[in-house]
Amino acid sequence: MRITGVFATVLFSALSSTGCVVSGSTPGMVDVPQRAHPEDSTLQELARVQPPEGQRALLVVFPKNACTGSARMVLMDGHGTFYGSVGPGEGALLEIPRSTRSLVVVSIVEVLAARGTWSYTDEVKVPAEPNGLLLRPTRANTRTCGSGHYAYADRATKSELEAAIAEAGTPIRWLSPRRAEGQAWIDEHRARVEELLARR
Image (cartoon, rainbow, N blue to C red; front, side, top):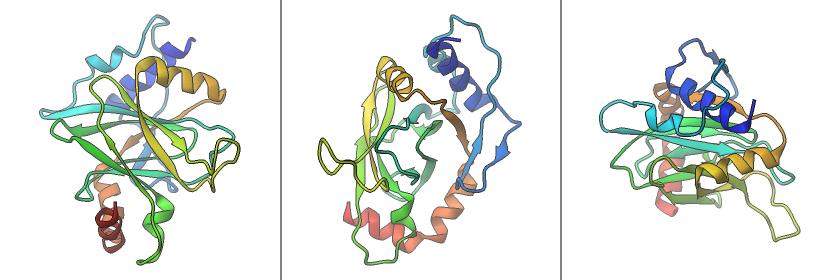
């Protein structure tokens, strides 16, 4: 199946699938099983997904490359509302309020760090539909990878997202949010989260 077909399969399944398996190492996220889908489907499938009133779908992809480590990136708003978390080699279709103008992207390493620790967060403007977000690992410079604990978010078009997945050369593990579960995890670390949001 072409990349476009796989892409559409996941986009449709991420919001419609109910038979998911919980992943213990992924706060607030569950695996999305792939399903059969027509060969000629494209990312335009996203435009036909119908989130609840006042919500929109946002695709987030974090392809693996030579500089990705193992740390997950958590996506939330400026008030600490959890929308999802995505790790290297993963992608997810999130639901966010249409009124949301920007998202904060922070490494799970930062959320679990002690209060007062130096921190790095990234804030990105939400792209127009149906564009999504492409997570890329931070680098020390053009030749040297960073620690693998951090990533930043780029707004990306359909073709840019597909190209990044194709370039990675490894299958994407697709996830779907469990918002209540993820919010409970954020709230367990609320003091540190508030500190991160205040410093951004």
